[in-house]
Structures are given as structure tokens and as C-alpha cells.
Image 1 (cartoon, rainbow, N blue to C red):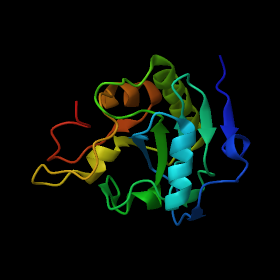
Image 2 (image 1 turned 120 degrees about the vertical axis):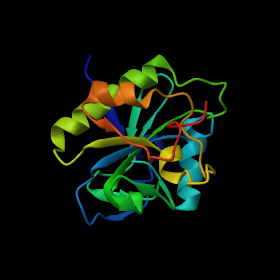
Image 3 (image 1 turned 90 degrees about the vertical axis):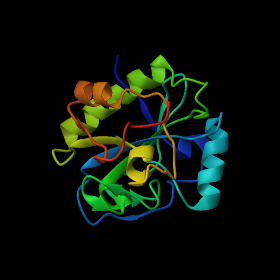
Length: 178
């Protein structure tokens, strides 16, 4: 089955999420969870805050494109990843619509859609090498963290299935909280 990706303006009629020119080709995909139960709530919150994701995946596996991947979008905040600080500069943000409460799982349809999307991105972007999480790029050396998403994802398995390498800093014990 081929993956259908719809532009976010077909959802709310308001165009792409806020974005700006990207200075480099993306090397990293950062996985997120919206921490909300609905796409409508996530989109409204992101627009209010001037943030966004390149892709959002609903529980039924439907994929929404929030901005062109050639553009930088605010999804990572203060961060440190495989190519240094300011991860927004060199990454693609992919978020599952999910409460990220440790109870509601990422659905099988969401995981399947993410894997298909990652394969497509990897095939089209030779610069893409890394798969990581919002937690992994915000965890501090003392073990504290700013973000916990997405919970319960087997990042090494998803990375392997999509032709990417899983990345986390040496001091992170895991990719996300359980």
C-alpha cells in the first residue's frame, strides 16, 4: 500500500506551519509526540506558538505534511544532536498525534506510516543519516531532561527498518522514557 501524504492546509486551510530557509541539507529525523489527543488541538497549539512539524501522523496512520523539508521549522527547541546544537537547523520533525502519557501507545498504523515515510525520505535525501527522539536531543549530562517524547518507541528497530542509524548522546540511558 502506498503512503498518502496530505498538506496541512487541506486540514485547516491556513497554509504551512511557520518556517524559514534551511542553511544545510537535513541529516536527522527527530521523533516527537504531540502530547495531545487530536490533530486539531495539536495544529492549533503549534500555530499559536509559531512552531510545527514537517510531518504529523494520526492514530489511523494518516500523514499530514506541515512544511517543505527544504525549510527549517521550530520543533526541537534548545537541543544537541548528532551534528551539534540547534537541531532544528539540520533536522526533519516527525510527530505522532499521541498523549505521550506512557499509557496511550503509538498505534501500529502510526508506526507503519512512520516507517514508510522514513524509507521515502531516506531514498530521496542522501544526506539523511540519523533517527533520534525529542528526549534524546534534550537530555542533559546529569540525566535531567526538558522533553520526554515520544514514549515507548524502539528507535533502533525503526532506524534499522528505514535505513537510518539510531542516535542518542553517550550519557542518555535510553531514547525516551518508558
